[in-house]
Length: 566
Image 1 (cartoon, helix red, strand yellow):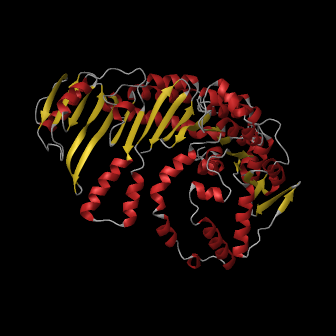
Image 2 (cartoon, helix red, strand yellow; image 1 turned 90 degrees about the horizontal axis):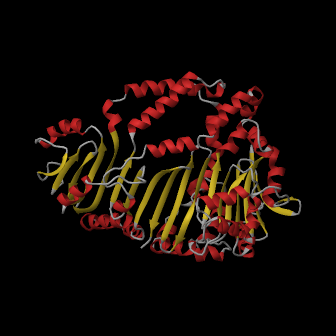
Image 3 (tube, one colour; image 1 turned 135 degrees about the vertical axis):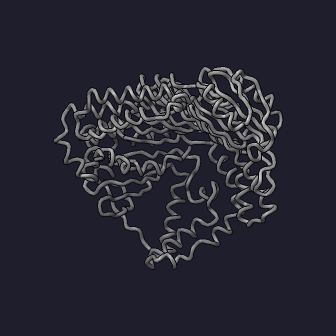
């Protein structure tokens, strides 16, 4: 099967962005008024005014007073490890580097020793609480980071040059001096401009245009600082608090179609000339078909809602076309015990809920629509073939799979003797419409007749290895549960009587790092362990129950994540 040219090229364009998308930055309110207030902040404007409105991606930190507390708390147990880690750095001479590169690496390592902390980085002029932005200029990555002390960073760079005996070459654009990064197809630039550290990349043919925007010799007429759309994003998704970012598939698609922002298009042509060679062959109907596909999921939105000494909370949104989003909302199902609140005290939990029959029918209807009116654009011919394959696979699917509505597994507590579980407390649940068929299947396992009247029965200890105090039950047309551990009978009755939720999650996952660390510590008491492993366990104990959940909304799928600190 042929691969569409635009599909094979997009991952490379996004690769640089994905590297930096985990950064975080302060705690201010959200809403339209607050979003406007945050964007109007003069210090943030000094960053936003350099970000073109046609950037295909951006991640902006509004500045924070909580990041330092967050980093300090998670760094504390690592401080004991740093001397050992620094002592075990590989012999630089064994890396096969040229002598000048070895000297430079030694100088950089020497400058960082003892400074890998919020306060240590401050000595170098860097600020973990700073406003910063990671974004695209002509599709390629760029960054602006507000410095705590530009003079201190310049002094650190000078010390590295002196210690290594290396002088970094400089170049000038307008009245701005920068350090160039040479390359064959791509060239880079690093500079300290005012109180900001900036860096970015551009194809050699576009470097003057791109570096003029990067270094501030030119400013885009339309930028995120005067963008109503960016303010609306912050307000609608409640992200005018700590940080916010996006990837706009529509802007990327326009570049791949030879349309839209000129610098985006020219950069792509320089990086992937075979893409530009196809532009003259793209008809207007072909372009509209590509745009209609992109409209199904036009943007990814992400950001941080909270970061401080108590923990971290963020979200990630996949925007969907309204009718697709509404259909996904209709696929939500209630699964016994599947909820963030119900799982938050677990050592480990995971589950999902989805009306598989509705999802299968929806997929089949869309595939049939493609077959009835196939794409005419050659770049999309693969989708015509994929639609036929999908219909075939759906028709061949096990009929029992259509009846699945979801399931959950929760381990609330776990006790070990060495590596062997001695006590397990939790449950497994499932939502399934054909409970009559389920009973006939499960009865061969339980060695006893089953009913789906909601009654609860006991299962002999260790019928399932390591599980004791086990009970089970099935409710007609809804599903069943298997509970184990203390008070499992009462828990089974509660789970079987679960009410339908107004907004059931599509997915929930929880894992408690500190409790896993305790289990690791107990295992080490019997099996022994290194000092490094002990310190690693201490590091894990800083974190509480990390949770992820996904919900279907009218705007798309919203993923939430929370990471508390002890």
